Image (cartoon, rainbow, N blue to C red; front, side, top):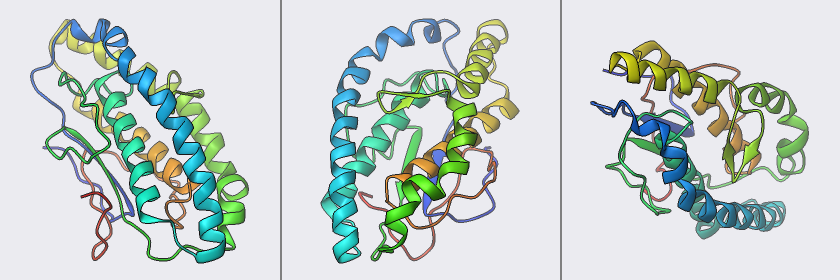
Length: 223
């Protein structure tokens, strides 16, 4: 069983390691996810535009319009599922759906608690000034973002090691899986904060394992 994280969080990243995993499929997943990458390029352009609109909405109303929030959450969920299937984790062989919805039956899930109010002052600085320390950290994890998701860096290196382990031993090392999910969780928390979806500053903490829960008493959008 995956080790749950100890704390509740406004950004809840969950992942279940599927068994068994194909020993060879991971070698061609870069081809299989090309249709997703093409769609995600356009979705992330829209994500950026929506975030700019939300910036002004928060500045004047202290609210992230719910429809826009759900769209951005959908883009993050879609990206996380594609990453989990491919070289962000290789944690499942189930092809990710072309969907902005929560897809609760898929082994990679993401929930972000919808904030009723957001700070007008924080919206001016959190996405660039306050997030800079985290940007420096996750740059090491990801070595850049492409089509809204990572394409190299520590996460991909560890994932490829896991792929070779599956090929030669038919087993995904449990501790390695926990570490990879922890790194992905850190990146997703920063992505949610930098895209103005929460005022909760991401912790400088590697919460490993596949399971965590959103803050109690706050429903996640789109659930």
